[in-house]
Image 1 (tube, one colour):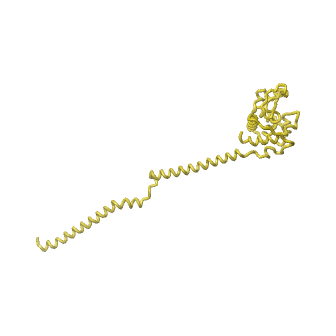
Image 2 (tube, rainbow, N blue to C red):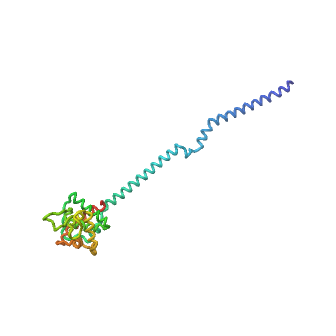
Image 3 (cartoon, helix red, strand yellow):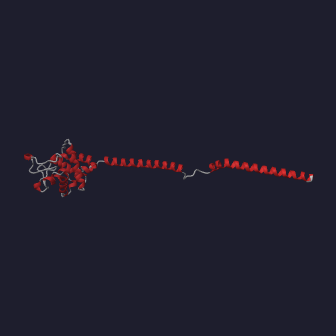
Amino acid sequence: MNKTLFSRWLPAVEQTSLVRRTALGVAGLAFVGGAVAGPAVAAQAAPEHAGSPVSQSVMADKGDKGDKGKSDKHDKGDKRDKDRKGDRKPSRDKLVPRGVQGEQSRISLSGEQSENVKAIVKATKKAGLDERAAVIAVGTSLQESKLENLGHLGDRNDHDSLGLFQQRPSSGWGSPEQITDPEYSTIAFLKGLRQVDGWHDLPLTEAAQKVQVSAYPDAYAQWEDQAADLVANTWNNS
């Protein structure tokens, strides 16, 4: 080969090699940069997937805590409502609309007597009557039997009078078994009370007397205050 031609060709080869090395170097640097920096950049640029198991778990936990908080508040609210309802006694105006009359009497009650108060109140509700009817019934029973479900008392018995209201089988109140059942005897008394015109607005002693036809018509009045207290403490718990 001509020496001059060779000398002209060699720089072209060297230049081509240099271009190739430079290109490879750039390509290699780009590759290394892509392998190392690419995922880091991608991770930095891409937001956390909202549907990933980890994020779903975290969100579920927060949701559960939020629901539990709401549930606890709801339960506490229901309990407070129930407590307020249970503590709310009937007003005195409902129990004794005309006030008490005359000197009042009181007795201490045994467990059995207290249970009979509950039975009277429960039967009054079953009959569809209100707190005033229960006060009249309890006051009547306080006078007739001191809230004791009396059987036949032998020589001390008032004829054949029995039970909480001293009702008489011979007068058509029912059989001895029926009259000595607190629910039956209370509903029987209230049935008679319903037939009294304006009973709801009458003083207790007048309403009771019209049903019982007692030889002592004014004796019922002395129990109205205690009867009202007993019904007030029992009405929402029976």
